[in-house]
Image 1 (cartoon, rainbow, N blue to C red):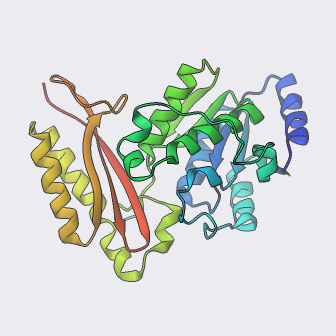
Image 2: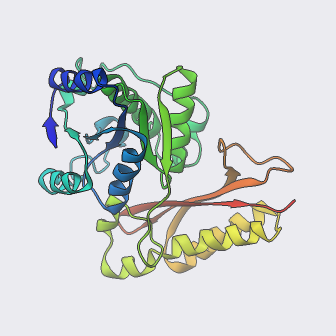
Length: 284
């Protein structure tokens, strides 16, 4: 597995692979990799002959006073894990490579509407930072396929929308959420949990699963379901930000007759902000 840090060597390697007809699959990450990330690499291998993984802790998606400076950086461990997972190239750009005119002077890309809802309502500017940096990684690597995880459901919906809106010839593939044995979704921020908080944390998935079961059983009172779920999370020890039921395809509010739904939530537990979601299908 090669490691490159600048655009020149990256493009030369990608051009060489493309001359032989190989499809390139990109897995964008911020590092501090866990088993969920490695599943993305495995899925990328199924969709491309060459797998590129990027590690870049993007400053523009952290809110002021956020954990950008303290975000775990574990490059050597990540490199070993990616080599074992079969990645072909690790791209670890410096800020100047991604933002050649500086972060403050950077061109921004914003998907209107949905960027300000759900998690966007609690993290102003976050999704603008995400879509802007993902587009930059796309233009640097020009992948045929890009793989994202379903845990960040709103993120992958926004990226799909951006790709379609800008006519980018990139196929977006979403990998199922990878969970620990007790149901907690893998996340780099799980390490912020204390032992007591870690025992509480699976309660987020349990609450969402309860809402999903109720919907599948025909309960159509979305307001009551989300209200009860918020109360349940608070009783378990979370500080819930939202629980929402949306249309799975695009996160629009469900209309009568919508069958494919997703239940989403964000909640704080100590220093960690946890997100999760479960898709479900309602009866006719």
